Length: 237
Image 1 (spheres, rainbow, N blue to C red):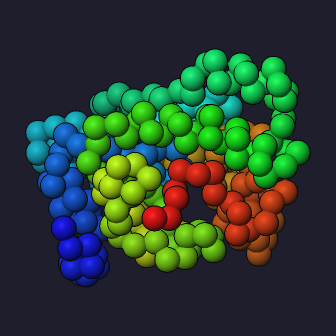
Image 2: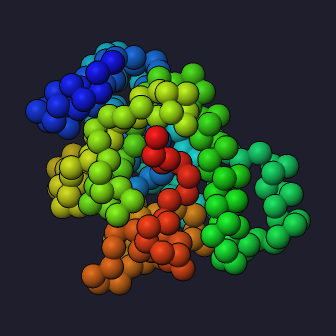
Image 3: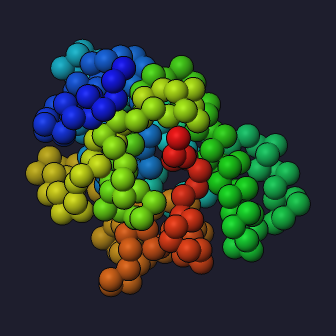
């Protein structure tokens, strides 16, 4: 597949058309990674529409780390009711979590970048590998505007870390305003923490509200430098 040509082709389409075109490549193998952020619920709406037109239901998985905010589960339930499907809930291996907590306690991620990445690896990275088993395309809500680590994300790329499957970022060029306008226009469920100053939402102890003028992801792992703020899910090839 010529990714350069595909990216150029997708750039000329509306985002809904991008999602429909990518979904049509392999409906059964297409899955959305959903964190319940507004980007992901907007994409879930588009994916549900694409799946409906094909007589199918969307596939979306949630990496349930065991430390998600309660509000996240409510958004997921709102989406489940609205789109009439079941999320694929993916959990970390219990023995890995137990070993980590016995050895380092419940807040080791505050102590060093290495410890934080270890926790993310157990709770998110390893479960992601299981979630993507058998998939041919995964869709994410990454946008270039979100952070310095995402400033050059393409519409489509090969994810070598997960067997060379396609990874799509249909909202790559969208602004925050575009996301909220779309959610409002289509009655898309919106995470309540977004309204409380949390533009990026992950695990409860690793997420805080941001201050005026701060980067979109400043509230994630706020004790680290901006160029280190990825958990390992989005590895550049």
